[in-house]
Length: 447
Image 1 (cartoon, rainbow, N blue to C red):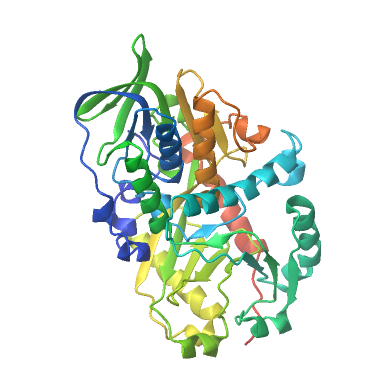
Image 2 (cartoon, helix red, strand yellow; image 1 turned 60 degrees about the horizontal axis):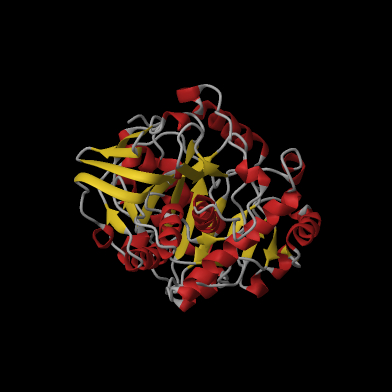
C-alpha cells in the first residue's frame, strides 16, 4: 500500500493529544479485525463521516453492509477535525463552476449538507454539543475588511441569507475581542463535537445491522465473475458493491484508479484548558460563533461549551513527530498574538490530520471507473463534516439506483483529473503556501 506522506501521518502519533478523545477515547471506537471468507451486499472502506453515512443509509434500506477501517472508525479527519459543520467542500469560484455546471447547484448543496447533519443529529438523537449560531469570517487585514460588503452581497446571492458586516470598533461589544480588522457574520452552520457526532452515527449504523471491523486495512480490490473481491491481511470479502471513503487517508494504489487524484494537506489544531468567565471577559471573545480568517493559510477557531478555545491552522507539507511539535509551537504563538489576553492560558492539547484537495477544486461523488459496483466520494477541501456526511448519503442513493434525495451538482459528478507530478505533487502546495506567505500578510489590529 503506497501513500503520499510518511508512515507517521497514518499512525496514532498525530492524534495522541487530541482534545476530542477525552469524551470519546480511541478505545471506545475499536472493533475486531475481520478474518476468513466473508460475504456482504456492500463493503464500505473507511469509517469516517462519508463511510458511516453511506453504511447507515444502505443498511436502513435493507442492504447487508460490512464496514472496514484500517485503524478504527473516526481515526482520520472525522475524529480529529476542528468541529465546524459549515458551508464549503469546494475551493472553486462561481466563475470556475460555470465551466462545469451550475454554481447555484453547488451553493444549494452546501446548505443542504449542513441541514443533512442537523437532521441526523435530531433524528438519531445525538448529543454532539451543537452550537447553532452560524459562522464568522474575520478580517486579518484592512484590505480584507474592505472587501466584506461585497462578500456579504455574494453570500446573499449564493445562499439567500443576509450576512452582517461588523466593523472593527464594534467587535468587542459583540463578544469578538481580538486583533481583527472586522468581521462578517454568515447565519449558516454550527459547531459540534466531532467524535460525539461520529459515535452517534456509529451506534445508529450498528443498530441498523452494519458489521464493523477495525485494524482491517484493505490491501487489494478486484472485480471478477463473482463480483467485487476485497482483501485484507486476513480476510477475503465478496460483495456486490463497495464504497471507498478514505478521503485524505487514501492509498495511492488501492484501487489503482485513485492514484494522484487526491492531494492530502495537513491541518493542525490546539485546544486550551477550560477558561474562567473572568478570562473570557478579559480578552472579550465570548461569542459561540465558529470563526475563520479570510485568507488561504487561515486560522480557524471556536469556543466549546465548556469554554475551551479550539484553534487551528492550515498548512503543512511534512509529517513527523518533530514537525508536528514545530507546527504546534507556531500555532500556539499565533494564538497568543491574536488573543494576547490569553497568552498565559495553557494549551494542553495539540494534534494534526489530513484534509483532501482535488485538482478540480470540487468533491467527487460517483462510481469508480473501470471497477463495476464500486463508488467513492472524496475531496472536501477541509470542510468535510457537512459535505462528507451529505455525499455519503448521496452515494447510498446512487448505489440503490434512485435519484439523489438531495441536490447532487454536476460539478461533483465529474471525475477529477490526476494532479501533475504524481508523488511529487506536494510541490503544488509548497508553491501556493509560499505565495500566500508573501501576498496574504496579516496586519492585526492593536488591542
